[in-house]
Length: 196
Image (cartoon, rainbow, N blue to C red):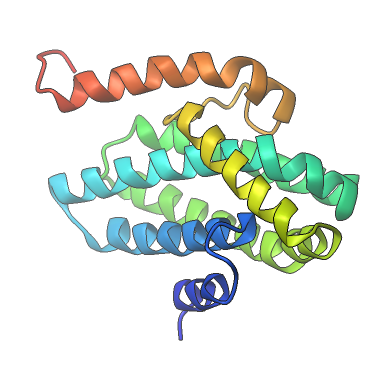
């Protein structure tokens, strides 16, 4: 069983709308997308990277807005701050990758570094942050956090914004505006409009 399958199995053992179950399913999908990008070529690789970039950005933003403040209380400030720093670094790496040709050797090398960092980050969350949050919150609170996480994802940016990444307060303040710009840009890019 690979890590993505293990995450899906852990998520399946929890209520579907539990915040940790939602995040575990997303971790599994992120791992799947890393493999797709790694193994694809050309336009297929670009499309897989675009999906990964959007999912990672939305996922990390929602975690910072909903999970991190609770983790700060349950797992400790040091743990929450470490995860936020990792997410800021991932945002910087994604922003750099977004500007590169997905077929270039430099992209592949930097993409492999990002994959290792994101995998390590997910493992830290799953070992340290998620158990602390689950232990300190009731099932009803975890489901309510799941609903808030889903709502935050709807207003989260779809492209990396390193200046606000890693800061829950900045995500709440700037995130919705960045999201509007990102989602408009994504819609235009997908529409076949020249100059995209």
